[in-house]
Image (cartoon, rainbow, N blue to C red; front, top):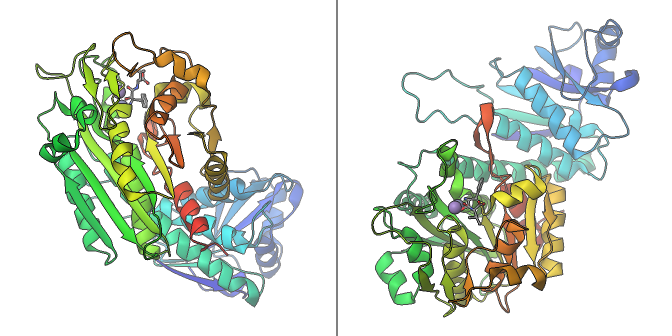
Length: 498
Ligand code: BES
Ligand code: MN
Ligand code: ZN
């Protein structure tokens, strides 16, 4: 995608589509006001006649307006002036993209970047706009036979800016958005692929392929024999029932010499049947998304490599399939983790923490400046926070704050849950150092506490993306979250935000 910024009048640009916005109570956005004037008051008339709605999420496409060079004008409702922020900007842009999805637009211009969304500047308005526009083009049709309907052949996206001084910031925002969309696409594809295709070996191959495209990105894959030597018996206990070999994928991006890296650890359970603690049948297909954490961190890595940010970033993905079989781990089995701590597996469906704990111990060798694990870890996190916020847990208030702030800027939000000692008591075991489950109460938090036992002395945080990494129901599919949040955090850390 090519992005350009422009200060010229929207009515004069001969693009396939111009996106403008109108607020409730008849106030026109800057782009709408200019187009309305050029078209002899047509937009205002259509609002008055009720043919154009100013409600957020609505969009009316007008064709061949007199005095306007563009073939169509997508008029978006922006809702109330007062509540207009990045979220509303994104929602309105998404509505416009949906409204013109069937058109064969190659070039479009959005004027919504001119709107004064709360707490944003031209960098973020351009970034959000370009990100939503780029994301709207995503389709997952790989698994469909026959010819697929062609999507919109969009090639060029223009972003209106007020003055010359804003152009550089907006351009930067669009560039960053392009890389975020690249990362989101990587993450969504991994998530959407069926579990018979997206196996641990597939993820390992995909990581190698990704590294092959960037010269300061390398991938190393550790196999089961080596894991055994490293003492990763907790991780290996999860793969015991599967015929698919487990892989520990390590990707290293070097953008800042010998600096300590930020390490991102992603849960890569390519299918979670629950193991011997088998999950119920309905909806079990969705456990193909249980590698959402892996997809998120590998997606973020794709963005980082595309942007060549001046930072060292390491990705560690423990990839396994959790299956029942005669060889599978049984409730009651006890294993020694790589850290030396022993774990009683009371529920084989609490497998994410069993692979992540060894991955966290392994990651110590990189002497991380910060280490963040990302996992579709608990159904309990969905009960606690729903599907809007990612669960954020950490013993480091500074790192938690950094993550929450990045999430707010990126409109990919997190919410902090407490990790106090009270919860850790629920993990007590009569036979091993501790158990892998802590009962129903505060399930997302006890899972976080479990991981915390392997993060001693690390600047560590845990993101539970069980509710945010995919959508269920009619629009079932991977969301790519938390790629935007992670990329924003890494941009901030590398001093790349304007
Ligand atoms: N992958 C699941 C968590 C999950 C459940 C994510 C539903 C998204 C939707 C995880 O491995 C799991 O099964 N967790 C158990 C933990 C329990 C056994 C302590 C859960 O949440 O029920
Ligand atoms: Mn499970
Ligand atoms: Zn799982």
